[in-house]
Length: 195
Image (cartoon, rainbow, N blue to C red; front, side, top):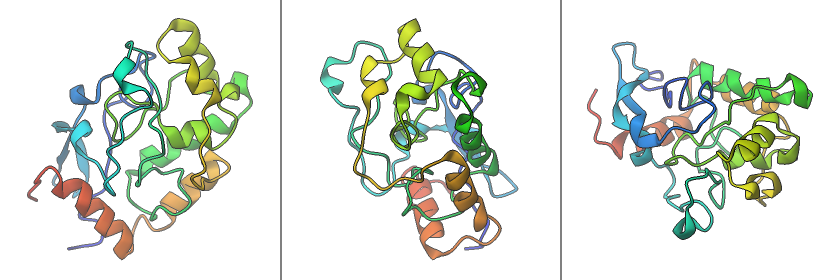
């Protein structure tokens, strides 16, 4: 396998932020393009799960239509300190930095889980005080996000900023290591993608 055979890009701007209402992951899909990158148009992201983390959002049995975080950040979450570098498309890493500013400077779009079916990214919520994220405040106010998002915490080690997570993720983008390639393969293999 070549080092840049796959680079995961979880979806359209609607899935990752430009639509203020979280989009169902079933509506967002992936396909490996000629450039070796995964493009959003064929495979539901909800079916791409790494590291065996298939835990639904907290209290998923009582889902009321409002997006919630998973219990823990996904195994391939770009905010995890232990995640391999170079898994996701560069645009996905660049999005992380936009949420580091003062609350009034941040995007109003919720950062959704790259793998979850309409889940809010637990790494994004847990890397800092989620009540300071403009998108969380607006999402709760609009009724798009469950209020538990504002209080989310995790014991999973996370980068302390989007910039740190992005720097780490972009570091090995041109030549991802074995762990990154293995993670990408797991994500792709779960959908039986053939390149």
